[in-house]
Length: 105
Image (cartoon, rainbow, N blue to C red):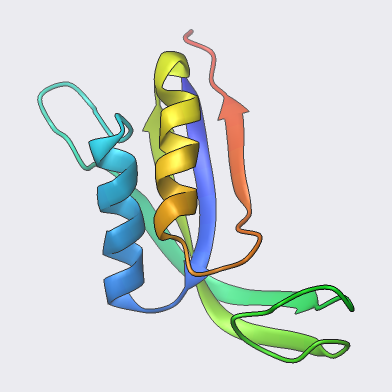
């Protein structure tokens, strides 16, 4: 089992678009519940390189924007499909999608 972390602009429509894509691909199942996740607000920071095509900000300048970190669980066998589903609907050119291995104790 993995815990997925993905960052997205702080817009309700995008939060649920990402969560729904991940859920459809198999993430966010806890017992008899689906679509389970958590999100928290913060500020994302980046510097767009010369070859980038930023959705927000300008090439060569530091940018910072309100973002949301979405967290969901994901079975190992669904990880590739979940990552692909998130990337298909994510607005960023290079979305950060982290998978952290969970251990059952």
